[in-house]
Image (cartoon, rainbow, N blue to C red; front, side, top):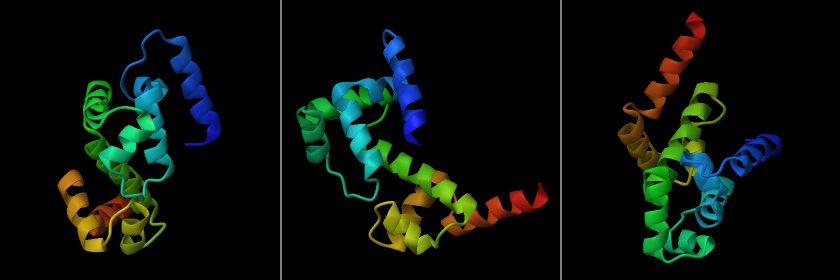
Length: 138
């Protein structure tokens, strides 16, 4: 997301009394700060303690705020975000699966592939191959 897009989203959130979902969480001082940190450094091995510190909350308050605003705890949100980035990169075939694993915060291709399969339902290679097939048919 570029700076202009982020500015537009923040401006929209500021005009809404109580924005909900991701936009509402982003505009929240605590959870928003943690979200921005995760998005800025997706490859970092974030802990709840670190995110809570950034959010200026206790660990339990941070986890509860994430769950309330985003419907998921911070660790699960981060996994989903990483997999969203991975799916996009695999569709564009911009890097190897091993490079993608490191870029999204996984210590090995094997660990990344296991997480990808759990979230997406196929291996990264299968996903890339299927995405290429759709492009070829279009």
